[in-house]
Each structure stands twice: as structure tokens, then as C-alpha cells.
Amino acid sequence: MIKNLISLFLLIGLFALQISCGTTKSSVSGDVENIWGLWEVKAIHNSDEEGYKETPHGMFKMIMMDGKFMNFMSTNKGAIITVDGSYNLKGNIYTEKIVNSFNSTQVGKDNLLQIKLSNKNFMYLRWFQPIDEFGVVRNRWVEEIWQRVLIEDLEESNVDLRQELRTLLTDEDAIKKVVN
Image (cartoon, rainbow, N blue to C red):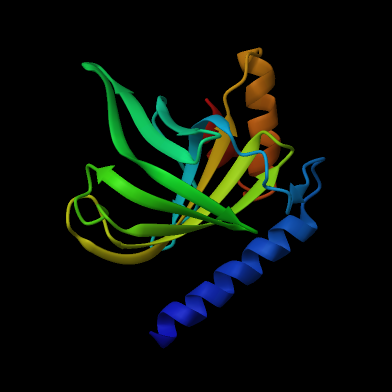
């Protein structure tokens, strides 16, 4: 327990330091009112692993104005819904009330996530994962970077993602791996 608390405080301190020392045009905002829309996850960091990792293309979160959300992904055999339910937003806490999930340990639970928006098109979600989708006890923090899906030029979109990652990462090879 104490080890987890120390890790949490170190993570928060490092994250705050990286944001304050970042030299990009990005600004993380407390304004999270306009989260509606389609988002694609771009990078993920698990507290028991080193650094942010690239995520497979085609993993989405749809946040609807009526208070419902749905995560889905595309596969070689078609699209599948991985989790759905309703959500509540209070300040910087986004709570998902899970109705259906491929991770049966989540069904019927409230998933509390810390949320921040950056430049209206990037969303940072941070949440605690006690058990993963395979039933393995993890007890770790998960941080995700989501990018709002817009009608735009893909190259321009990757430039924005590169700038956002530079606020978190210093290794240019790791940034290239996530973006390319």
C-alpha cells in the first residue's frame, strides 16, 4: 500500500514537472466540458512498465451528449464493442458506469478516471486497473492519450500528436514509434 502511494506521488510529480518544463505550444486545460465525440487512443502507459507505448490503430471511444459512452475497435473480422455504459463528468473526474464489457470484472462497476483536455483535440485519461481483461491482478495506474477524430489531413494530425508526446517523452525514437 505504501509502495503504491509513493509510486502515485512520484508519478503525479513527474507528470507535473514534464508539463511545466514542456516547450510545446500545447496547454493542458481544466475545461473538460466538451468531451463529446469520437476519440482514438494513440498511446498508453502502464505504471508497471517503462514509458508510453504505441497502441494498435482502430481503438475508439465514442462519448455521446446523452450521457452514454462506448469503446470499440476494428479487427480483421469486423468491429467489436469492448465496453459500454453511461458516464458522469464532475470537474476532472470522468466516471464510466459499466453496463457491458469484455472484461467481466468491470460489469456493473464504476470506473473513475482522471481527465484532462489539451488543445481541445487531445484527452488524457488516467485510471487504476486492479485486474486486467485476462483476470490477472495488476494493481497499476494506466494513462492513455486519446486524439479527437476530425476530418483533417493525417500528416497534420500526426504533427499535433508528435507535439503532445513531446510534453511527456524526451526520447525521439519512442515518439516516432507511437506516431508512425
